[in-house]
Image (cartoon, rainbow, N blue to C red; front, side):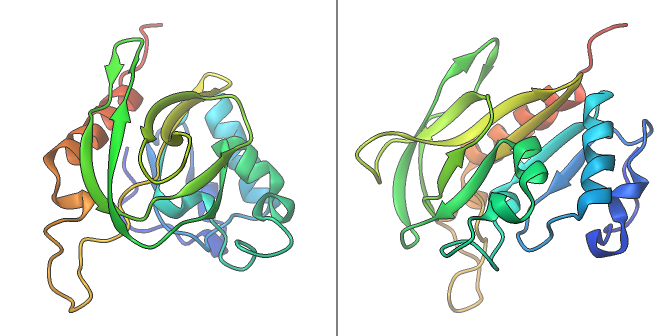
Length: 195
Protein backbone atom coordinates (compact mmCIF):
# COMPACT_ATOMS: atom_id res chain seq x y z
CA UNK A 1 0.00 0.00 0.00
CA UNK A 2 1.17 3.51 -0.78
CA UNK A 3 -0.35 6.28 1.28
CA UNK A 4 -2.43 8.46 -1.09
CA UNK A 5 -1.24 11.85 0.09
CA UNK A 6 1.69 13.41 1.93
CA UNK A 7 1.70 12.50 5.60
CA UNK A 8 2.44 15.51 7.82
CA UNK A 9 4.90 14.38 10.47
CA UNK A 10 3.89 17.19 12.82
CA UNK A 11 0.38 15.78 13.07
CA UNK A 12 1.46 12.27 13.99
CA UNK A 13 1.67 11.02 10.42
CA UNK A 14 3.81 8.02 11.31
CA UNK A 15 0.73 6.67 13.07
CA UNK A 16 -0.47 5.65 9.60
CA UNK A 17 2.39 3.16 9.27
CA UNK A 18 1.01 -0.35 9.38
CA UNK A 19 1.74 -3.76 7.92
CA UNK A 20 -0.26 -2.59 4.87
CA UNK A 21 2.36 0.08 4.06
CA UNK A 22 5.03 -1.41 1.80
CA UNK A 23 7.52 1.46 1.63
CA UNK A 24 8.16 4.74 3.43
CA UNK A 25 10.08 7.35 1.40
CA UNK A 26 11.44 10.47 3.10
CA UNK A 27 13.44 13.30 1.52
CA UNK A 28 13.55 16.57 3.34
CA UNK A 29 14.98 17.91 6.54
CA UNK A 30 13.18 19.64 9.40
CA UNK A 31 10.62 16.85 9.59
CA UNK A 32 12.01 14.96 12.56
CA UNK A 33 9.30 12.92 14.30
CA UNK A 34 8.67 13.21 18.01
CA UNK A 35 9.07 10.32 20.43
CA UNK A 36 5.63 8.77 19.84
CA UNK A 37 6.11 8.74 16.07
CA UNK A 38 9.68 7.47 16.46
CA UNK A 39 8.25 4.60 18.54
CA UNK A 40 5.77 3.84 15.71
CA UNK A 41 8.53 4.01 13.11
CA UNK A 42 10.75 1.68 15.15
CA UNK A 43 7.94 -0.87 15.65
CA UNK A 44 7.04 -0.71 11.95
CA UNK A 45 10.66 -1.27 10.89
CA UNK A 46 11.24 -4.02 13.47
CA UNK A 47 8.22 -5.89 12.12
CA UNK A 48 9.41 -5.75 8.50
CA UNK A 49 8.88 -2.15 7.33
CA UNK A 50 11.00 -0.79 4.48
CA UNK A 51 12.30 2.81 4.47
CA UNK A 52 14.04 4.69 1.64
CA UNK A 53 15.57 7.82 3.19
CA UNK A 54 16.89 10.34 0.71
CA UNK A 55 19.15 13.37 0.85
CA UNK A 56 18.40 15.52 3.90
CA UNK A 57 16.32 13.02 5.88
CA UNK A 58 19.28 12.83 8.29
CA UNK A 59 19.52 16.62 8.73
CA UNK A 60 17.84 18.95 11.17
CA UNK A 61 18.52 22.57 10.19
CA UNK A 62 17.75 23.85 13.67
CA UNK A 63 20.83 22.06 15.01
CA UNK A 64 23.05 21.07 12.05
CA UNK A 65 26.24 23.05 11.91
CA UNK A 66 25.97 24.15 15.51
CA UNK A 67 25.31 22.84 18.98
CA UNK A 68 23.68 20.58 19.96
CA UNK A 69 24.42 18.01 17.28
CA UNK A 70 21.31 16.68 15.46
CA UNK A 71 21.26 13.29 17.13
CA UNK A 72 21.24 14.97 20.54
CA UNK A 73 17.79 16.40 19.78
CA UNK A 74 16.10 13.22 18.47
CA UNK A 75 18.64 10.45 19.08
CA UNK A 76 16.44 7.42 18.38
CA UNK A 77 15.27 8.73 15.00
CA UNK A 78 18.85 9.15 13.80
CA UNK A 79 19.88 5.81 15.30
CA UNK A 80 17.09 4.10 13.34
CA UNK A 81 18.22 5.90 10.19
CA UNK A 82 21.88 5.12 10.92
CA UNK A 83 23.55 8.47 10.15
CA UNK A 84 23.48 12.19 10.76
CA UNK A 85 24.23 15.06 8.39
CA UNK A 86 27.22 17.16 9.38
CA UNK A 87 27.34 19.67 6.53
CA UNK A 88 28.52 19.96 2.93
CA UNK A 89 30.80 22.03 0.74
CA UNK A 90 29.25 24.04 -2.11
CA UNK A 91 27.41 22.20 -4.87
CA UNK A 92 30.01 20.91 -7.32
CA UNK A 93 30.82 18.09 -9.71
CA UNK A 94 32.32 14.96 -8.13
CA UNK A 95 32.73 11.24 -8.68
CA UNK A 96 30.88 8.52 -6.81
CA UNK A 97 31.85 4.85 -6.68
CA UNK A 98 29.61 1.92 -5.96
CA UNK A 99 30.37 -1.41 -4.38
CA UNK A 100 29.01 -4.89 -5.03
CA UNK A 101 27.21 -5.96 -1.85
CA UNK A 102 25.39 -9.28 -1.86
CA UNK A 103 23.97 -8.89 -5.35
CA UNK A 104 23.32 -5.13 -5.21
CA UNK A 105 25.75 -2.98 -7.19
CA UNK A 106 25.29 0.78 -7.22
CA UNK A 107 26.96 2.49 -10.14
CA UNK A 108 30.06 4.65 -10.66
CA UNK A 109 29.39 8.08 -12.20
CA UNK A 110 30.10 11.79 -12.06
CA UNK A 111 27.41 14.00 -10.56
CA UNK A 112 26.78 17.66 -9.73
CA UNK A 113 25.28 17.84 -6.24
CA UNK A 114 25.89 18.70 -2.61
CA UNK A 115 28.77 16.53 -1.39
CA UNK A 116 27.15 15.57 1.90
CA UNK A 117 29.28 14.86 4.94
CA UNK A 118 27.45 12.25 6.97
CA UNK A 119 28.53 10.53 10.15
CA UNK A 120 27.56 6.91 10.56
CA UNK A 121 26.13 6.25 14.03
CA UNK A 122 24.85 2.70 13.51
CA UNK A 123 26.11 -0.39 11.75
CA UNK A 124 25.36 -0.35 8.03
CA UNK A 125 26.55 -1.82 4.76
CA UNK A 126 28.06 0.99 2.64
CA UNK A 127 26.89 0.84 -0.97
CA UNK A 128 28.43 3.97 -2.50
CA UNK A 129 31.05 6.62 -1.71
CA UNK A 130 31.99 10.17 -2.70
CA UNK A 131 35.61 9.51 -3.73
CA UNK A 132 36.63 13.02 -4.71
CA UNK A 133 35.72 15.86 -2.36
CA UNK A 134 37.56 14.75 0.79
CA UNK A 135 40.88 13.04 1.57
CA UNK A 136 39.08 9.77 2.42
CA UNK A 137 36.00 8.29 0.66
CA UNK A 138 32.76 9.42 2.31
CA UNK A 139 29.70 7.14 2.45
CA UNK A 140 26.75 8.49 0.48
CA UNK A 141 24.57 5.38 0.26
CA UNK A 142 24.02 2.46 2.60
CA UNK A 143 21.53 -0.11 3.82
CA UNK A 144 20.93 -1.44 7.29
CA UNK A 145 18.60 -3.83 9.04
CA UNK A 146 16.30 -2.88 11.90
CA UNK A 147 14.66 -6.02 13.26
CA UNK A 148 13.18 -7.70 10.19
CA UNK A 149 12.91 -4.32 8.45
CA UNK A 150 15.33 -2.57 6.15
CA UNK A 151 16.54 1.01 5.75
CA UNK A 152 18.29 2.34 2.63
CA UNK A 153 19.74 5.86 2.53
CA UNK A 154 21.12 7.90 -0.38
CA UNK A 155 22.59 11.38 0.14
CA UNK A 156 22.35 12.68 -3.43
CA UNK A 157 19.38 14.45 -4.97
CA UNK A 158 19.59 18.05 -3.74
CA UNK A 159 17.68 19.68 -6.59
CA UNK A 160 16.57 19.38 -10.18
CA UNK A 161 16.32 23.16 -10.59
CA UNK A 162 19.17 25.56 -11.35
CA UNK A 163 19.60 29.03 -9.82
CA UNK A 164 17.40 30.62 -12.50
CA UNK A 165 14.53 28.23 -11.75
CA UNK A 166 15.05 26.18 -14.90
CA UNK A 167 15.94 22.50 -15.12
CA UNK A 168 19.44 21.65 -13.93
CA UNK A 169 20.72 19.27 -16.59
CA UNK A 170 23.84 18.47 -14.53
CA UNK A 171 22.12 17.53 -11.27
CA UNK A 172 21.90 14.00 -9.93
CA UNK A 173 18.24 13.68 -10.96
CA UNK A 174 19.28 14.22 -14.62
CA UNK A 175 21.83 11.37 -14.49
CA UNK A 176 20.43 7.99 -15.63
CA UNK A 177 22.80 6.10 -13.32
CA UNK A 178 21.48 7.92 -10.23
CA UNK A 179 17.88 7.23 -11.21
CA UNK A 180 18.79 3.58 -11.86
CA UNK A 181 20.45 3.39 -8.42
CA UNK A 182 17.24 4.65 -6.80
CA UNK A 183 15.18 2.14 -8.79
CA UNK A 184 17.52 -0.64 -7.62
CA UNK A 185 17.23 0.49 -4.00
CA UNK A 186 13.42 0.54 -4.26
CA UNK A 187 13.44 -2.94 -5.83
CA UNK A 188 15.71 -4.23 -3.07
CA UNK A 189 13.42 -2.77 -0.42
CA UNK A 190 10.25 -4.11 -2.00
CA UNK A 191 11.45 -7.67 -2.53
CA UNK A 192 10.57 -9.60 0.59
CA UNK A 193 11.82 -13.07 1.43
CA UNK A 194 9.31 -15.88 1.11
CA UNK A 195 7.79 -16.86 4.50
